Image (cartoon, rainbow, N blue to C red):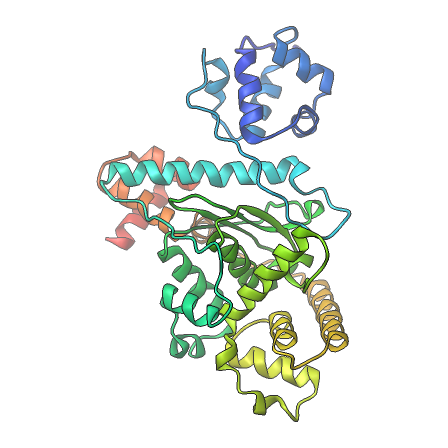
Length: 384
């Protein structure tokens, strides 16, 4: 078999790798070549094959033609996201697939801003709070987002996440979802702060689905504090520990729980004669949160002690493991709905509006939304 060697610009190979935040080792694993081969390609001493270069374009999430440019098309944008994971034994930001997902959402944000400018629309600015108030935080944030109790209470469990997500998106945040965050990274969510259109990335699929609402609010609190961060599953239940990372995560947990279940809305007398499990179920049903979130709130309100809290978490872990093992059915979701989740509603809408107004053509809209061209016109007609 004849291998076709390429004549690309080796400097652009370096730029594309660094733009996604890959080390040489991460990139070599992603592309499927040795570190020595990649070093040689980046130094111009031994170019990659055509297939390897195509794979590099895919793994770096950049157009293939970029490798042949004489200079980068834009200034380097990569910035490492602070890692606030508290659970040991995971790879975190060092996992190339996680870095790729972060690059994707950063790139989508830039596309979103460009499309807004093309439509003469202003990007929403985000007002951070930095020092969160110690009293009435939940009510203050709910008022800021336009959350209404009557609307929450009228929704089913499966609708509440979408309700909160839409409210947060309406506040100027771009919320993206992905099923491609690798489990071995230990990451379930990320917050990437910008003054204009900050980003929340939420992992979905499997056991992550049950955590999506709390993950969303946890990351939103990071944005309120003006902080970018990566977070893991254990970070959602940590109460307080000695490290600065754990203390920050504990603060964000308490704030997220307070927003979902404000203290002033709790009627303590209603919980007096209930056992811990009954308390958890009652609070969850009242505020339409998961049992785990309910357990966090009960501990915060002093309605259960630490031992009872850990017991409830263990019950939830076993129940979730059982649920996952029994769930072998694959639910078919229309691709446009998946892309709406991945891209977020604001970006999905602005792309369709840009195409409908002639700002971008059909093929650009198809490429951005990762949908077939025949689907784009149908979607535009549906929103007209």
